[in-house]
Image (cartoon, rainbow, N blue to C red):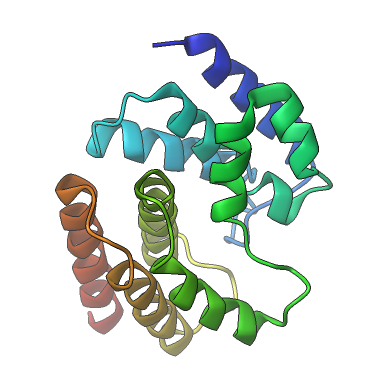
Length: 179
């Protein structure tokens, strides 16, 4: 395992996301999210491919920071750039169109990108369940769960460990909403 690329990716992501916060009540540092995604695919999904783990750490840099694809390619190589681009939403579209496109695009993802998508949705469902954005109602949280499930259901099946875990935490999230 080439830990150096993982550490470089973590450092790069931390620098790029340094001024960003999550929408939870504590406004936790944004970098916690990509780290959580990388941990999920590594620990739960048993993924040991360092480039996939590095791409998980970098997965929101193009979408949410001033990072350009060329910058990722120069620093991390073509494969990592392509993986990050595959899971990046088009911010020129409105939110409703982006969400619709993410469901549609899920069917086109490569197996490696699906791993990152699964990790991202698992992390987000966990956050929406346990530390939801401040002003999200139960209805909005429920709609997020439905949308995340639609995205994952449209992905090819690639990692039963992550897929089963996603279903488990989705069930727990929905159960928590009704109790």
